[in-house]
Amino acid sequence: MPFTFEERIKTVEDRIKKACERSGRSRDEVHIIAVTKYVSLDTTKSALEHGFCDLGENRWQDAQEKWEAISAESDTSADKQPVWHFIGSLQSNKAKDVIGKFTYIHSLDRLSLAEAIDKRALQLGITVPCFIQVNVSGENSKQGIAPEELAPFVEKLSRYKSITPIGLMTMAPYEAEPEQTRPVFKTLRELRDEIQINSEYGNTITHLSMGMSNDFDIAIEEGATWIRLGTILVGKEEE
Ligand SMILES: *Cc1c(COP(=O)(O)O)cnc(C)c1O
Image: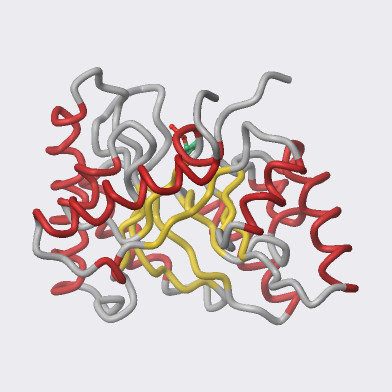
């Protein structure tokens, strides 16, 4: 990476502030997840030292070493424990590895997964805040439920008492011109607004997890409350 961590943080912060100003939002409404899936344990620790306490990973196999090392360390030091966000697609049989370690799940996209999360959470005596992943763009390669299936899906979720749906998540297609992603983010916001009016979860489904390195300015303008930043913030290291 050509820049230091401090320089990258400053660039990102400036862009977040400007996007908030352009859209009349308060900076406090936008939370950053530092996505550490491309970087080492040392870089992950550096992110924590720089005050990024929300960490995102998309595969348990890749996250495990970092999760275990950091959890073990925090026992002995007064360091603040990070909050882990699971942002990748989750196989139902992996839910038992992840639930209890990752506080937030951003990729709830089917009832069989809800069932697996609920079962594990019940065993642990916890409730799990989840984002429902929506495939707004309709690309085959993207996970998530179709927009028209969202309302019935949300209704069925009420069976799973150990899951609290707190928001919607989407990934926009990569666009060379980030402005092109705007309709995807706008649609996710409108879907959230409809649910707030029409569902018993109206009070809890408030958050929008959207925006990555390439398109977070646009996502913020369209209402993102959690942006997930990998490359632009913590970098990308070769294996
Ligand atoms: C990898 C990943 C990110 C971060 O990607 P960057 O483009 O490096 O910021 C965000 N969200 C999800 C779901 C990811 O898998």
